[in-house]
Length: 485
Image (cartoon, rainbow, N blue to C red; front, side, top):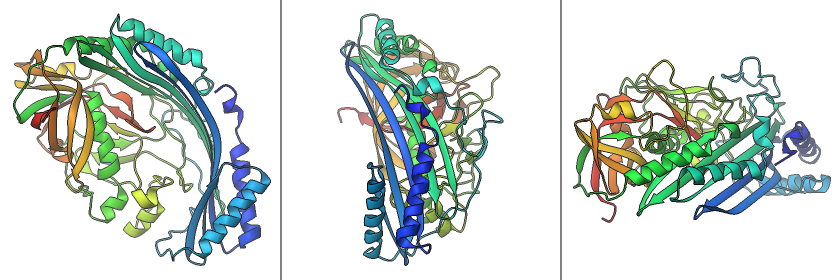
């Protein structure tokens, strides 16, 4: 990825050029918005405790959305020559002429400055190029990722390991025919690995805006400790169990909240549980979307969305009360409000989703984001276990699927370590379990018995979103069977 971060300004020039082509070919009556995104991703995979794949890719894509004569069409290209961009405009204009009428077109974002990064006062000039960006992560080479894999494998001390370490650099720009023109860049890193012992798996994962914050030895030691502690599990019957969810499991809850709960399109269609102004969660629960980072972490995302709307922190739940849902310009217009800066390339179809949710940790001086410790139990979960009379410690949730989007009833499996807790002590590992649980109901008033004091930044299971999660002590979790049935 070396040298990729020296592209500042190139994307904005491309975007401005496409806007000029639209004016020449479609006239000033056409409304146009252009996204130019240069993305470089590098991935180092390991299995059987050895690196088996190192891949890297870099590309610059241009997306055009054009609205003319009451119709809308979009197009994209990676051919960034003068001829390639002209062809993009010509074929998008041709597509507009045969598209159906677009009665939900919300118009273009007006010119607006980008906002300051919450974690880096004074860094937010209009260009957005200094929003907590880490140059070293953007320039990371394969040896730096390999070093972390080596440390992970060594720390597992002979256990079989597998996983990945990745770095991503993005430089992007947006321009529209209404005069909005912004640019920004971001970098991120993530590591996710498992260790296996006697058929039992342990996991450790972490996301960061700086590759330097990923310690392969810490992660490998934690994965190995969990695997060793999970050997020879017992089976438990179905039932409603008190649980302590480690941050990895809470990450799955936040991901489903983002995609199905706080989605403004789903809310407009009455397919979301969210009711702004109502106390739907325990008073201890506050959930914030933080695309501009925090005082502990550089910016998590670009400072603008796919429609050029400046991003900002958005409180979705405050002290148990649902306060907002996420909107792009289309869902906002339908709701009679303003965009919250959550437009994506597919948000008009699939809904606008938050990508940087944080469930606020319990206030405790000295608590800070981290990797969750090197033992079998995440640091954020340790103090919560002592308050459990009889229940379960659950590391991770996976293969989760929505059964009822309105109530956000989820079914899925536990993974990578489950233990029985009796009288505040872990007494036995437990085999993986199937559950069926409404996520909002699990966090309802009176159901949250404790929140850990440390949040852990975790990568999304399949994309590049980041979630900051503490451990949770919950009064009830509905176990419906063992993993085999």
